[in-house]
Image (cartoon, rainbow, N blue to C red):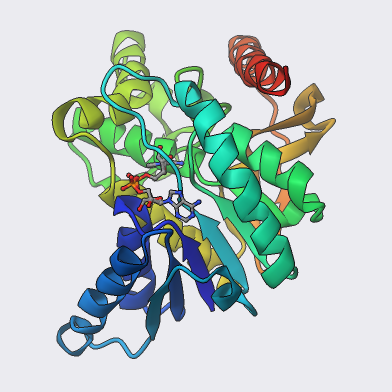
Length: 303
Ligand code: NAI
């Protein structure tokens, strides 16, 4: 069973993906009980059309997450046009901390996935507050950035998005680091197919992708909900998928005491392994800057 805390746009769309792809039953929890119940009812009524048998329950009772294999936190405020994700830090830390306490109380064995922004900092807070092993506390961010990176590469080359493979690491935010040196189209490095100027354009579009959507419709929903489903599937089915996930570092890439996106193998135990890649000097510098951005925000939080 999977519990999703926060039945807002992202939480409910993620719940629907988890059901329709037959990944798991879902408990959807929100402080607004009617919202959670209403979303659950609406989804159940879709079941005969999409032909899924999974069950969903909406509630405001946190004890109903008992026995969850995965708990996904999407509760909290979303950014408005013009805001950065880090602008949400204080408000959302106040929401996420007490939720983590409930998770420890009712689902102490779960894998805990953070979605609430700024996701790297929420992951750090959840890791510290929960006392869980670090492989069990991780954040969704870079996999979404990578989806956007892949889409922009495919569009520029007019090739199928399916054939484009790429990673983004670092903060799920303005200092993210799209890994140009590891992006490929069916194994062909993008540096063989695109000029430097085109790659720069793609990298910039990747970084602003989230804000570009928010400027137009106020929030991002479908892409985050899709990748939450991919991550849940990787864990519950033990698929050992490789993706960028926010993880607490203990010396990897030369950094400690920070949660930030790095490539990992995601499987039954959550983060099964952190993959340490050789990085170009320019990429290393960008990652250092990204770590600094997160560490500064964490420092301000505890002041
Ligand atoms: P939303 O406003 O539609 O939903 C948030 C929900 O959280 C609301 O229904 C609210 O009642 C609920 N909530 C607030 N406090 C709660 C509590 N203490 N317990 C239970 N529920 C509570 O917002 P949306 O668009 O769903 O975004 C949710 C969060 O996800 C935001 O912080 C947003 O920035 C983040 N996000 C993260 C992404 C990522 O890539 N990591 C992508 C998209 C959004």
